[in-house]
Length: 238
Image (cartoon, rainbow, N blue to C red; front, side, top):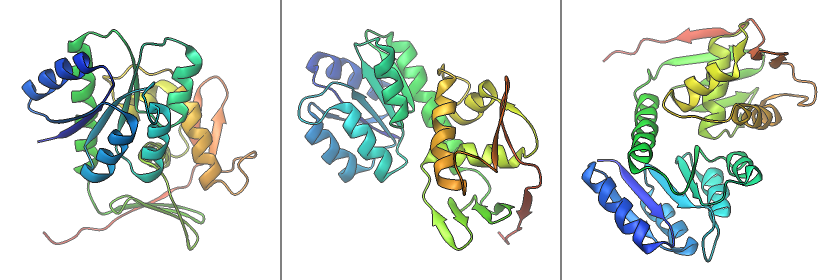
C-alpha cells in the first residue's frame, strides 16, 4: 500500500482529500503546518508528498527544497496562486507537479496514480545495466553516477534525464519527449521544466557547465547526449 503525506493548513480540504485518497486504497497521513509536515516526511518516508505552497511554520517551497535535497520522494505542490513565478519557483526547487486550487478531485487522483505508477516502473527496472561515456559512468541498478572516481549526487529527475539522454546518445530528443519519458504521459508540465532540470544536471556532470560537452542543446528541437555511450548489461543468476 502506497503511503501519502498531505500537508495543508486547510482542515476541510485535508479531511476531504484524505477520505478520497483512502478510498483509493492509500495510507494517508496529514499535517497542518510545515514544521510537523517536515517531521513526518523524515519519520515516515512516504511514497508521495502533497503540500500547500503557503504554509504556516515552514512554507511549502522550503519543504520542497529540503525534501529534494534529502531524498527522491516525489512532491506535488498545491497553490491558490496562479502566478507564473510561483509555478516556476516550485519546479525549480524540484517539485514533480504543481496543481492550482481549486482542482477537480478526479484529476488530482489521476495525477497521484500516475506519479505512483511512474515510481513503480523505476523500481522494477532491470538492475544490471550501466552506461559509460568518457569519464562519466552511470550504474542504473544502484542509482549511482561517477565522474572518474568521484561520485556525483543526483536527485531522481536528474538521474532519469541523464539515463534517458545517454540511452539515446546521438539522437535529438524534444522537450515533449523528455517530459513524457521522465514525468509520465499523464502529466501536463511546462516544457521549461526540462530546461530547468537540464541546467541543474549540467552543473553536476559537465566539466565546464557553461560550455557543455556531454549534454548538447539542439536548437529548435531539444537536447542530445553526445554520441558514443557504451552500454553494459550483466546477466545475474536468478
